[in-house]
Length: 414
Image (cartoon, rainbow, N blue to C red; front, side, top):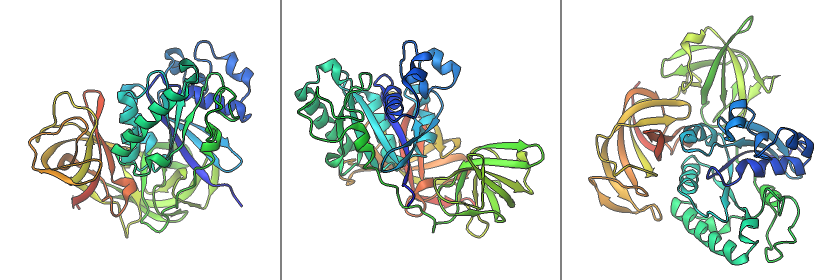
């Protein structure tokens, strides 16, 4: 029986040790050698493993989304390392939307930072349902149980408030990624901790049900023109099944063609299912007809196109307050378009979902609300009740993500 396949994203504040934890896991599981790490390392001993771009290595940051494979005794994990710096949250949106599960890394000495909360709220809104929390840098607080307990309680409250109803059931694993404590083996420095290691917690992740019965949706991440082959869009199947020979349509432009071939990790395949990151060659469509942000579907149930929709949002950060008429950028799957908040319909209690106020005049950081959005041009977006995978979006302004949300209803443009 094939092991379940999990797409995993690492989230959390920039300096809390996400890449170090990944590097340590890869070494202890024998994916790479300690020597491979230390040869290129310098100051960020483990971090460079995921940061394959030279510029990132020089800056000591993780920029775009990098993929690494990891096999545990229970499952097969693709690690999607999410960026941590504020200006990279946009990448996290396209990254986290490709994840089923997340590891939230929080440093014991720093505790909860604004980015901790922002990443966790994004993960929830982007539909990441399974979460493991690692409390890293326990060495910096002397492996102290009281420090761990306090931070754990704070995190349970934070995650519960964001909407994770089962936050108290998540694993909160105390670790030191740099020193390799409690990563794959129980740590003698923390005899008070009785839960699983970081690896043990990862092994509890289960593969989500693949939504193969829903209409086909493939958001296009990139498009290549390959000599002798033709137009090759790249993307991840979110819902439905794509087969060689299918007729497909790309929305919002409505260009259609026929699938000649499909490949994943350079291997040809006859059919692709949700979760597969694929390239597919389409006959009858030129590179100019398809762009990043388009969505492919079958002509009988084409992707929904809208420029006006109603959404539930969580406000993550605003300079002062968010008022009707405010005009930011909306990022939905790989598409991004400018638009405005036409109307704030209701303010909602994020913990209970109850309506607190009808037609409030403004929203502040931490508020949840029902809003009406009007975009400057149509994009593909779906209702959360129908195809949640394509209902989620992030709102950006002035170089930061100010809100995350999901579409609950829409006015079809076609």
